[in-house]
Image (cartoon, rainbow, N blue to C red; front, top):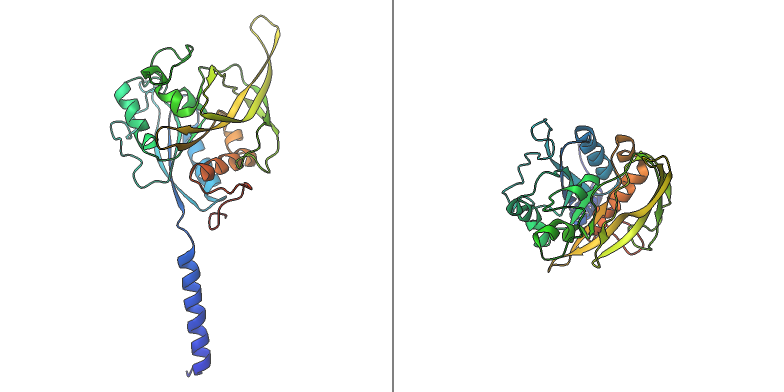
Length: 281
């Protein structure tokens, strides 16, 4: 079959321009998602988060997951422990583990090492109750072992009340919150606030009404989503305490919020709250 020279040149031109367009598209953000520990259906949630992020933005999620046993319920044997370079090659690390029983300072410093070195991070739900040295109910001081993990998070929490719906209200204009609407969750855990550090910027509050043990009605209204600037590298860190139950983790509104947190932490969210060029899906 013969091809006319003009047609051939046209085809070649289209091929070259298509190659150039593909070459110009940025590589996906490489995200490391860490899950494991007690009290949550991480085996399901890890896949809900991976699918939700990858369907919303130019993101590739790799997983580090360990199943829980009675022996390691609060001390999941995650392979990141003792490996301070575990985040090498990744743009963002998502901490979604539940490791409340890990209190060894050297281990905790190893978990923090990538973020102290500048690797952005996102923290979900039980990550706020991990890696605690000393009493979580006592206000921590920055620069002490007690304050290591809380300084990184930007907020100190020690526990939660009963599972009841949470009225989520966005409080601060911010790229992460632009275009998002308030909503009410299903029955969920509302984490308390012991203190919010000056390096943190609260983005959303959660309000929950419940019956106390004495039968009286109580209302809590606390910060449930925020950003933080951590360490000498001014590492971007986004966190939300929402996300206990599967129905919440797969909620489109929750996944939209987490996706924006990932993009913002990596510097790929515009001031208008849109993915940077090449990172929309």
